[in-house]
Length: 234
Ligand SMILES: Nc1nc2c(ncn2[C@@H]2O[C@H](COP(=O)(O)OP(=O)(O)O)[C@@H](O)[C@H]2O)c(=O)[nH]1
Ligand SMILES: [Mg+2]
Image: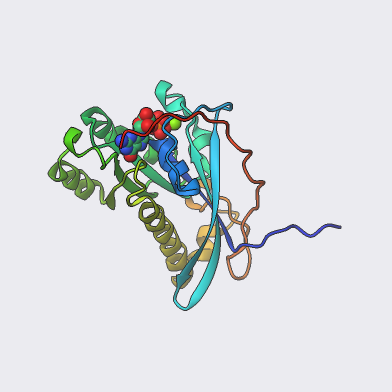
């Protein structure tokens, strides 16, 4: 019998959402590769990138295997299926600071999340991307502040081009998901939340249940994605 090679404590699955062209794919590549791919060609309907990180909290060290899923262009046709949202534990919701339209669509994306995510109030980090394009910026800080306040969303301005705040945005989301898990444990709600008998909508997805809540599914690494490059404008 082979022993499964699980050398991490948690598997987190996140989704990157937002209108087409806001920089989701570039942001993801910047996070995992530390590089800006100005153009990306996908061969499959859905893509994900993976990264390992360590989260320290309350004197404990948690090894996290992070899997971040990209829409691979399907957002263009509003054709994301329910299955796409179902197992995600956290969401990076992106708009483009140089596009009012992408900002106005945030409410619709939140509505989609409320409908399809595992809970009506999932962990979301709102990102205003392309912060390097200062001259082209059309979405004001006041506008975003009002929206973030209305929906109780943490907000961060990022640039997939320069890499500014990308790591911080993901770390923020990891922190929020970990806090949710830790609170559930501290409140002794965890067994309730995780119970197989609970409805799917109340459970954090992708968990394998154990005494210390720590083992999660392992999946294979993503295959390398072909891409083409163009000069960066920033
Ligand atoms: N200047 C600048 N351009 C960006 C940034 N992020 C993405 N882009 C550009 O915006 C376009 C769309 O990016 P992409 O990641 O494909 O968007 P997606 O459709 O949301 O996945 C591409 O031409 C990128 O080069 C950024 O932070 N700054
Ligand atoms: Mg894309």
